[in-house]
Image (cartoon, rainbow, N blue to C red; front, side, top):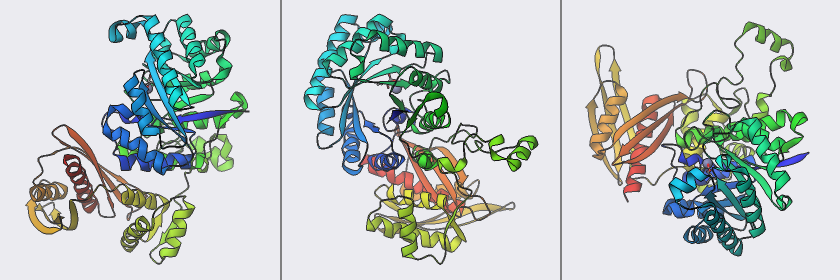
Amino acid sequence: MRLIRIFDTTLRDGEQSPGASMNTEEKVNVARQLARLGVDIIEAGFAISSQGDFDAIRAVGGEVEGPVIASLARCREADIKRAWEALKDIPKRRIHTFHSTSDIHLKYQYRIGREEALKRSVEMVRLARSLVEDVEFSPMDATRTEVSYLAEVVEAVIEAGAGTVNIPDTVGYTIPSEFEKLIRHLFEKVRNIGQAVISVHCHNDLGLATANSLAAVSAGAGQVECTINGIGERAGNCSLEEIVMSLRTRRDYFDADTGINSGEIMRSSRLVTKITGISVQPNKAIVGANAFAHESGIHQDGLLKEKTTYEIIRPESIGLHSTRLVLGKHSGRHAFKARLREMKYELSEEEIERAFEKFKHLADQKKDVYEEDLEALVSETITKAPEKYALVDIAVSSGMSQKPTASVRLLIDGAEASRTSHGDGPVDAAYKAIAVLTGTKSTLQRFEVKGITGGMDALGEVTVIVDEDGRTVRGHGADTDIITASALAYVNALNKLAAKRK
Ligand code: KIV
Ligand code: ZN
């Protein structure tokens, strides 16, 4: 059985989804989860693109053990050197360099010929290899590149020292049978192909990213690049959960598998949704809310008799448990810590203490605390932006015959201030009071409420997207009271804006 490497690019290509930008803390949080999931490589950013990306690569490399950490770099000396600067203290590191090879890109974007593109690619792979052992090269827009030239580039970069050559379907143009043929052709024509791992990186513009990646695996590809929930540039990338579960479910067909701990898939999906604010469509394969919901009477009848009649994946195999009760109001610090350890969270004593305080507060309001509640609570604790504002209290009155009113008390740089405002509804009234207290000039772009677990006492999770002078941030808040959750989410976003302004 072949072991296919999983190269996760949620933090780089995934972050290119509109509105998905993550701060360093959030990236470290996602990277920790990717390590628990067992990905082989984490592309943590594009070092030269911004100081934020540079810092995030260093922080991820400093905090996350297990996967190789990669930085993207164009085929330019400054890019390669910046990637090296970001990676140099990380023991398991990779420089991933790329250059377009299609005539369309070379003619209109780069304004150079094929020979020059080949020369630059080889030179920059050599430079990268003089700095790190592990170098990956991507001929960008490979699926629209003339095939014999593509083979020539692949051979030359392997000769120059690339240990992985990635074949990107940059614009999501290819189709499975064609892509399989292309990969087979490379295996036949490239003399030294056995010296490198062939990878694929498929975009989803025609909804074929997973199918194309699977076709490439059939043809011999040994690495797949993908993202959690399939987020990424435009229509996104191949989704990690789809490629992993396709290979696992159809091991009989592919005779290949990955080293992914599939029980961590659901948690990874929820974390990325929460941090990026990008929701998963309900009918999304594997991680959508309806992926295991059987509606038809005939299907339900079959399932009751024998699960395999209509179920090809056991929900538990991706970490979806039927609302597993974990703790209650009487659980102490010791049980709380033990549960976090079981859930494989590695938190500092201070983070555990903060999370425990929140847990006590939650358990007072909610009889049973489920695993999903704990996940929300932990990520609240570790993704907190430095706080300029803190919500002290909120009281609202509203009803069919009453003008909605909210009284809000905030700590602003440690000093308490309060305000009462009216609005169209209780959330609007609360947001108006907070806006006056903080003097924010930002505008609210999106407001979303979700119940984390079922039932009347479910924890409500609010995500807001707020924009100020072209800076967009997401805020999150979770509470059993959705007005409080809404206020927490708004305050969280304003704290992030304040941190960005600094
Ligand atoms: O889509 C693409 O071609 C890329 C490369 C940088 C690998 O993201
Ligand atoms: Zn891409």
